[in-house]
Image (tube, rainbow, N blue to C red; front, side, top):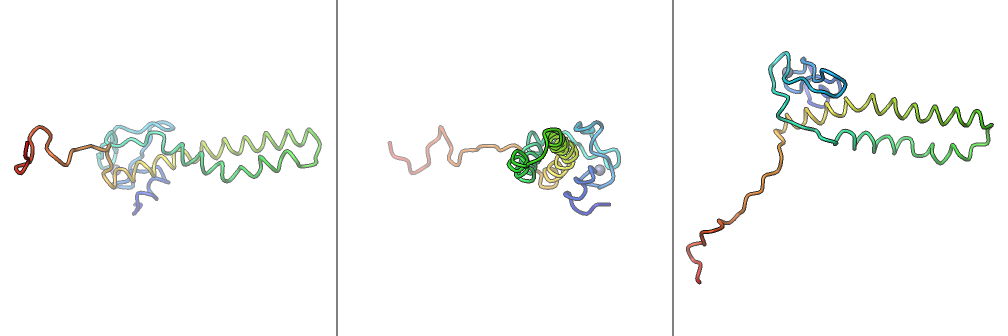
Length: 133
Ligand SMILES: [Zn+2]
């Protein structure tokens, strides 16, 4: 249905088949895809989506935090504008969070991302053949 993990993530669909739903609750994943059976427990987005959404929101809304205090309007209108600004920020954050989480999750599955494993290049405990004591 969706050809890229980004598009399927934006629509909160499985990154493998593009049809199954990712979430059973607001930000809770299903255990597996109800269409193709993809295991959803193999990836974890942690706080990545919150970081990207928070950064985007601050870039978009930061100018208003400087402009709004110096706007010459009545106090009632100014309070109303602050309420509107903060409500808009909260609304955008709550709307974008599942989308970003879906995109990051689908990208992890697509690229088989996993936790870093550290392996030594040398063999500890047995020195190389040309080693002199
Ligand atoms: Zn699927």
